[in-house]
Image (cartoon, rainbow, N blue to C red; front, side):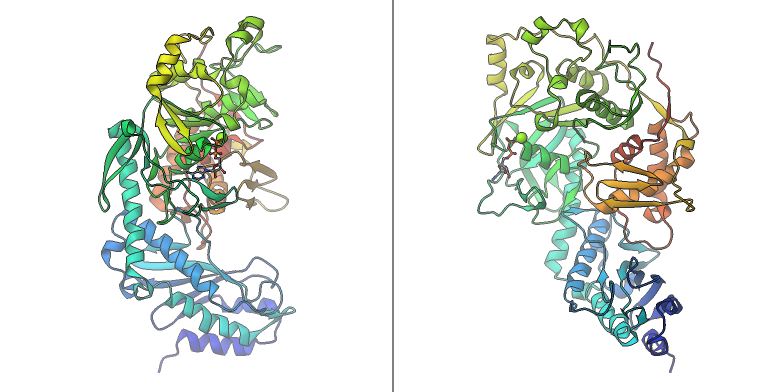
Amino acid sequence: MPQTGRDRLGELLKRLDGRGYPAYRNLEGSYPFERWTLSIDRVQGDPFAAPSRLSARVTLDATGFPGDTFGGRSREIALRDLIARQFVDACRRIPKESRGSGNSGWIAIERPGQEILDTSAVVLTEGHLEARFTAGLPAYGRRIAGRAAEEMLCVEIPRIVEGSLFFSAYDRDRLHRHVLTCEDACAIRSQLPSLGLVAFVADGAILPRRSGVDDRPMERTRAVPFESPPSLRVRVNTPNSGEVTGMGIREGVTLIVGGGFHGKSTLLFGIERGVYDHVPGDGREFVIARGDAVRIRAEDGRRIEKNDVSPFLTNLPFMADTSEFSTDDVSGSTSQAANILEAMEVGTSLLLIDEDASATNFMIRDHRMQELLHKDLEPITPFIDRVRQIYAEHGVSTILVIGGSGDYFDVADTVVCMAEYRPVDVTGRARSIAEKYRSERRFEGTMAFGPVQQRAPLPGTFDPGRGRRPVKIAIRDRWTIAFGREAIDLSAISQLVHAAQTRAIGFAMLHAVRFMDGATPLRRVIDLMMGDLADKGLDALRPGRHGDLAAFRRQELAAAINRLRTLEVRNLNQRQ
Ligand code: ADP
Ligand code: MG
């Protein structure tokens, strides 16, 4: 009888038992089990190091998943996401008592959050389903614990794999709901442009979260479900859930007003996350935004590199030219301007701005302040004087939370008032108030916003090396990439939703360097990078079956490049 992988592993581990930890390296290789194959891809150097990388591979036929659970891009991503979730649950059922030193006995897969992301944890390639996970190979001190390893590799991991990689292990209703909901959300997102909408918030949606650090929905007993005002209610069609109704936010300029604590920021946050699909039960399944929407905030202290901030900033003291503005420590208002221009540079159709995270002097300069300080003494052209031009000239809409300035009524197409978590359409009232009490503030902009900056990154300014290592890229947490010797601070990038995205962006920055030549605009570099990624998949970023990468948007990749403190660019602007 041919020897199975299980037998071979058992024999190997008997021999390795009690030997020094490095002898575990002999395990690297693949082991066919009855219905699937275990592969030990990379063994850790010692019990305290990052855990070993393993994968389990099954032919798609053997998994039994019916074609309608993975046919089409969004269903496939949703199925892979659900498998990762079930894998996480199966790991939890493994007893957690100590298996020895360091991370002995630990088994884990990258854990998804509330969003459904395309990740490298569970992949479907060449007719196979593959799960990539990590395990701490057991040791006592620095000696191999052979029996514990055998229990782990030959009993526990097979139990987890059997419980997550095969259709028979699934609740069919849950599985179908998962893939169909995700497909419906994608379908709504793809309809938005033809409906003239930038966002859609379904009736019945639960927007508030449990807390600032817990992204799960607020308990249904406390949360007020979303209900569109009748005048803004639209219907969208979905392939699986039929017609869905909700508030449609049209292109142009939309204000969200209302008293403090009435749910304005919560609504905007829901929309900001609406660039992603959410798991059933999240409450935001059908809260959908244009896929290229960018949340903008003030971010004083960041570095900017040859930014053309002249639409918002002119006549700076001691500085002639704001069309190539570099500084290592930018002010709040200028950072907000740079964030908008960088978002437009790489491409967006929707800006999301909350007064809570804005610089007041960037948002508005009222009549009295205009009287006190002549325009010549104020370098800033406030956003209120540019927001319509951004839409008219560049097709970029804005949704703005602003409870503090009625001057914005003059530039808004739609005004929604949040009152006790319920939206009310107050557009008509805001208009008549604007008629009755004319704002005395003067327009301070120029006639046109003008072209948006294009800058070409210089490839030599990306150095991923550190010490003797030519490439050292890692993440510290969801908001920090260690790129060579540099730490890139992404804490203001709130549409980064998973650390696996941050990690992928770190590697993508390096990958993108091949498309840079000092003349190719950043926007084009990112086009090429994202195209390459779409063709080759996340594995192109980091060969070797790493399960810890997640797909990201071009906007967040650009944000990371723009925050690399060593970045240098050539400004390609035609502006005089
Ligand atoms: P604002 O921006 O208008 O000041 P927030 O959006 O910050 O208000 O909301 C204030 C509080 O109300 C938050 O703690 C939030 O969780 C809660 N909240 C928001 N929307 C709802 C809702 N629909 N149901 C219940 N609580 C909500
Ligand atoms: Mg708020």
